[in-house]
Amino acid sequence: MRTLESIDVRERTVLVRVDFNVPLSDTGVILDDTRIRAAVPTLTRLFELGASKLVLASHLGRPKGQFNPKYSMALIVDRVSDLLGRPVQLLPLDLEQARQVIQNGREGSVFLLENTRFYPGEEKNDIQFAHQLASLADVYVNDAFGSAHRAHASTEAIAKLLPSAAGLLMEKEVEVLTKILNSPNRPFVAILGGAKVSDKLGVISNLLPRVDKVLIGGAMANTFLLAQGLKVGKSLAEADMIDTAQQLLSEQKIDLPVDVVVASSLQDPDSKEIVEVNLVPENKSIYDIGPKTIENYSSVIATASTVFWNGPMGVFETEGFADGTYAIARAVANCSGFTVVGGGDSVSALENSGMSSSVDHVSTGGGASLEFLEGKKLPGIAALEDNNA
Image (cartoon, rainbow, N blue to C red; front, top):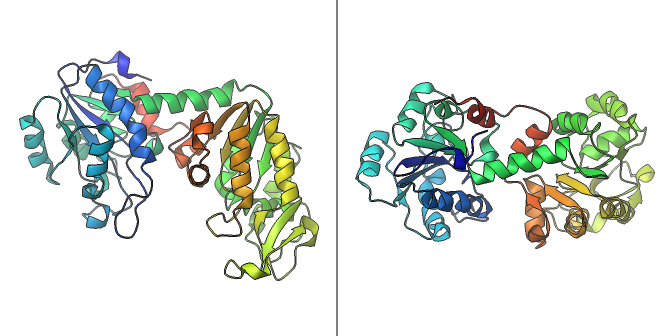
């Protein structure tokens, strides 16, 4: 994979695919600017290497190929400017007009394209749209690891039209995830949560031969409990995945909850109780792991030399069912081994508990990191490796 140091950006305009797909409130206020901050080192380095102008491109939300002010980059351009420490100009939606603005810009200018998903050609990986994007710059840099698993025009097709390279963030993500896949320090412990076994099946299957232990939480644990012949009341589970779960359990590397937090519903916290996994009431659902499980999992994590965590242990967004997820966040943060948190809700839990600075690597891409750990070839990365421009 080409890196920044391997291409010449001196006195050139560089189009940088970043991942500014940040969470917004209903009124358009940025709730978490982690992804914007993560892009700053690459943008700063490009100017240090002599780049003339930068054109930033990102998607935001799912506007389905048409303009929607709810997803406009106008909502985030000021924050980008603040974090980068220099003015950032939002470009017009019309790409020909945008090209004129870029050409007339001064040395050192930074421009932000409108949401790439406002253009129908983006998600279709349309080569004509890619050519339009390529006409805006001389060099292409992809620093959007969070979108590397998407074969879109701004992440895949354009990389074959311009001299291209990975940004610093992309380079670091690939380096870290490759290390834990191929040469982890042992014991290697993976912690996987979330709703469905089917969503994480590829990751579990690819990691099982490589790890020493997998700790399972979230609703996906319920399917494994069913596979052990236990009853889970009204809990979310995948009955059609029971045979698969039994096969995975035969590897004897998977640890499951021994106690859980149950309730009649998320809206009825007064009905909450802690029960052993073989005593889940028929009229209640599992919403978190229990204190014994927290203790068991934390002790395993404490002895690990490598840890990868993706997915909450329960419905941590709801007060009363967050203890398990936050306890695991603390355990990972306190682990003396090499710790990696793979995007999504796990990162939110880390941020909310103030623990993110204690983790060695916090991935900016939940879906991308999971697909990477499944062993899949990510289109955005493959395009940089195959580039002969």
